[in-house]
Amino acid sequence: MLPIVILAPALRLGWLCVPPALIAAVTEVKKFADLGSPCFEQFVYAEFLQSGALDSHLRRMRLLYRLRRDALIRALHARRSDWTIRGIAAGLHLVAMLPRGIDERQVGRTAAARGVRLYPIGTYWQRRPKRDRHGLVLGYAHLTEREIVNGVDAGLP
Picture 1 (spheres, rainbow, N blue to C red):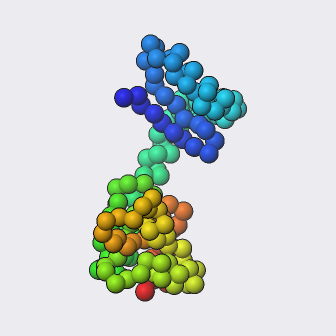
Picture 2: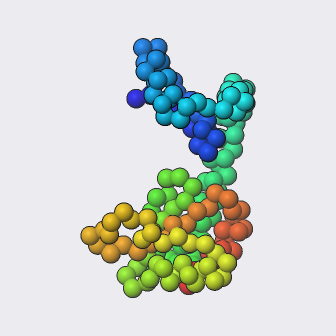
Picture 3: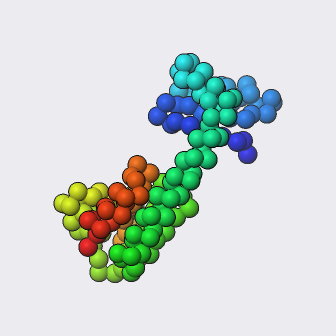
């Protein structure tokens, strides 16, 4: 397994640690994948890696995101202890599974009317699951802890 680090997918920046025997093959695949990467951004990224700034940034952001995630979990438990929280360790969002009888789309519409965006998981299914599963995707990366608490208080039924 090759270690892959992606810094900014929108900028097509990242790096691979490739064994010498695979460099030519990986270079060829990369060439046909997107016809090249931006030079200036690559130099900036290389400096970011070499200076240790990426490691520092990641340590700082992991702590910040953990605090935000924990604030969201606490607020959800205080407001809706009947919702089951999943995906706590994955990414910058979590999923709140709703009890039977609660319409995820209606909760989303009500929250939107109150200025809070929630995303029903039903919109993410490629095909209907065998059992009815209703839930909401809740992102927290761009919000402060106070905004998270206020959003839960304002947006949830």
